[in-house]
Image (cartoon, rainbow, N blue to C red):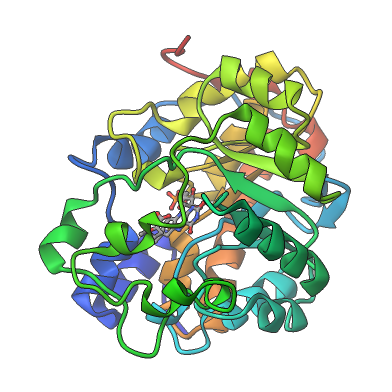
Amino acid sequence: MSDALNIFDLEKLAKENLPPTAYDYYSSGAWDEVTLRENCNAFNRIQVHYKVMVDVSKRDLTTTVLGQKVSMPILLAPTAFHKLAHPDGEVATVRAAGASNTIMTLSSLSTTKVEEVTAAAKSPVWFQLYINKDRGFTRDLVARVKAAGCKALMLTVDTPEWGRRERDVRNCFHLPPGLSAINLIPSNERGEFIGQHGAGMGQAFTWMLDPSLTWKDVEWLRSITDLPIIVKGVCRPDDAELAIQHGVSAVLVSNHGARQMDTAPATIEVLPAIAEQVAGRVPVLLDGGIRRGLDVFKALALGATAVQIGRPVLWGLANGGQQGVQTALELLRKELDLAMALAGCPDIASIKRDFVKVPNRHF
Ligand SMILES: Cc1cc2nc3c(=O)[nH]c(=O)nc-3n(C[C@H](O)[C@H](O)[C@H](O)COP(=O)(O)O)c2cc1C
Ligand SMILES: CCCCC(=O)C(=O)O
């Protein structure tokens, strides 16, 4: 339905379709948005050293992530409030993930009940979790999402407090009447009011965060569930090491789409050192700034098993719901496929470290 040639076109169309406050909420980053720009710009500084005269007439983008086969190494990151973009909300998103045969992680702050999302799923759904100050609340939620059929927990660890997104503060951003973080309601009366207060998004949701969290809470989480745990928000090799020591099943290199700590490095810049530290013990995933299939190629060359996309899904959702999300996913799939052909890589396993050159390494 859309004439979008790429994700940037989809964003332009989304901006026209969305109420300005919703567009600002989706697009913004923390403070001066330095990292927001860097997440994308850093990909462009990486060179691709392609091979020639390789038979790339047949190409295979399939791969396996945590034992789950996907049609491509591009997963859907957890993002809040999909009904702000389209009335079908997270159901549209999960249907698109199913049609593209890849994994969606549902945000804790989804505007659709987890059971409704998994019922519409044709491919695995993971659940993004914040550990609540009230551990009983978290325990109930974990049991509920497992019963609903979620196949892994993605524990977000970069959010002891909400980062400050000044566009939201200026806009007095809040959820319109009728929308709420619905999964958080049944266990907690405060849920009803979540997000209904202007300018106070951060405040309205602060009750669900616990700034006292440490790695021992990952052990606690492991003790209450047998679901695999992916730690989301790691940006340093030493933290990746601690995550592994505390028994996680995967490490996700992420700076929360630049919405938490501003001037944090671009995720693609810290990926090589983290992948070296992890050394294949668990899968390393990455998100932040992926706007081209070529970016996916670079992340894989630098050690990621797969990547996640956040905002591109929302831009798709704002352009016709399920169909728009499929457009976003298929644009990126085609770009990755072409990048692999041009680089001389017929399959995912052949995308190796020596295909890319990184100008300045962190750590
Ligand atoms: C509008 C929006 C909402 C988000 N909501 C959540 C969330 O509820 N939980 C979470 O762990 N991360 C959340 N994130 C972060 C994403 O999971 C992901 O890390 C980030 O969007 C990746 O960067 P990209 O948008 O540049 O692809 C959100 C990001 C955006 C843009
Ligand atoms: C109050 C913030 C809601 C979620 C969100 O925007 C994020 O995780 O970045």
